Figure 1 (cartoon, rainbow over the protein chains, first blue to last red):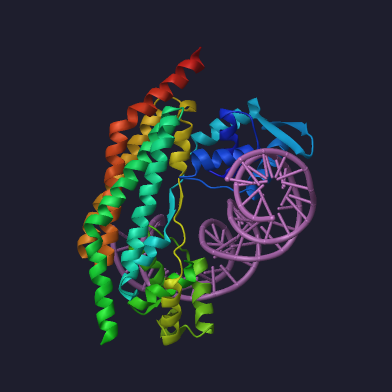
Figure 2 (spheres, each protein chain N blue to C red):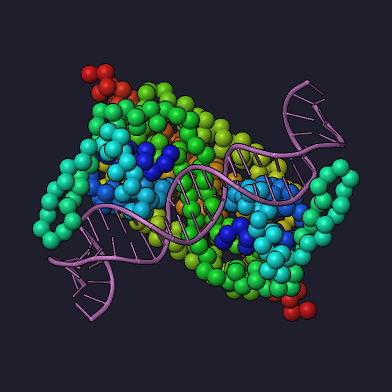
Length: 179
Length: 179
DNA sequence: GTTCTCATGTAAATCGTTACATGATTAT
DNA sequence: ATAATCATGTAACGATTTACATGAGAAC
């Protein structure tokens, strides 16, 4: 699913300007999708040219016009058609995991610090999601939010229970470096 | 961490050709990193030009030379220096999750099928990892492998326990479409 | 006989981010 | 006064993938 399609999707929820769509991406999709203005604005322009969106410029004093986009019937059709296509694979890329692969090359202490920070990060995310989750409107969003929390909680527990494996390995690297 | 750096990292394990490095990426890093020949080959050429790798061409009959790369002392130093840099954020992008956001727009049955397939996929992955995990050499790899299994198992349980949320929503969409 | 494995490499295309350009308003 | 929010848009740059080019040997 590309940014074009996801802009259409967001606009099935409600009309919005490019600026607002960015915020919706951040507030509601940020756990599994990212997009910058540099990709959103051109996408909206193109979708409008293709008749999948309509656009109303709301003039404002001392600010650029707010361009509020609505999805058209064609747009809705195109979006549902896009949803029907086979789902692409998840793309996950983690520098954290990649770094762990080489933990035996890292100075002692660095690995422990990394793991501590990661646990803190996940705890903070869970806290955020806990409050978010209550506010979420749709069951879909509650499902996704709960999913994220469950996964992060598992990650925390796993790290806590198995970190000795990595910490032992880093120490081994240190010892062999000291020889 | 870019592909350049990760090629260096892989070559701290053992000498290898570009072709073999690709396999190592697939066998041991595929859960959190992906790379194609189109990125690996140019990276190796460049790293060799910079003196971070050395290359020995092993001529073979009726096949292109195997170019076996070794990491140099400079390369090792550069790699450890790269590891010391602050770790980049995980990048996760999921069409599956994005699609779930719009489950109320999907035909009844489609959502259930999606969830069934996802559970099957995760079960298959866990099975693969279970056998992989036993073979893994380093503690780092055991840690990562176990991490993956724990997360996938949580995902399966979560989906099974909460799928009714999505299935109810899809049905609601169907009913309102039938009105 | 068709697919998989071995083996390297380049060029074009894709997809997206970052930085730039501009500038008022509101909250701390 | 400093940062954040509001508001849009373009251009340059970056990283990586896909497709192309080439071809033999082994396995099923």
